[in-house]
Length: 82
Image 1 (cartoon, rainbow, N blue to C red):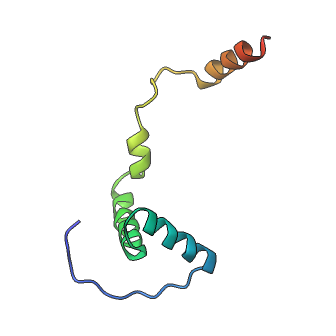
Image 2 (cartoon, helix red, strand yellow; image 1 turned 120 degrees about the vertical axis):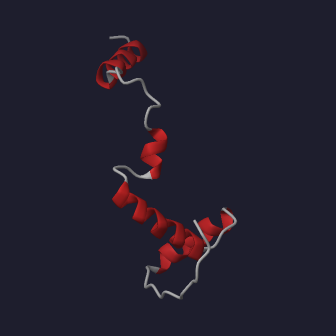
Image 3 (cartoon, rainbow, N blue to C red; image 1 turned 60 degrees about the horizontal axis):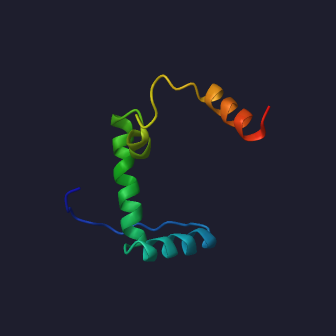
């Protein structure tokens, strides 16, 4: 992301959400403005990409041939002894 001229934007947001956003920003050593800027930046990417950054990051972690339903069923049978 390149540094460009910044303008002020006024938003109306639920008070509880503002408190949560400020706490999150403080915990992650950033500002609410920076959080919003990054969110808006990724909105532009969403038009170009089929998936969000998180989905792209998680893609490929599981084998393509994994049968989730059968694997889970086997896990439950082993756990509960059916």
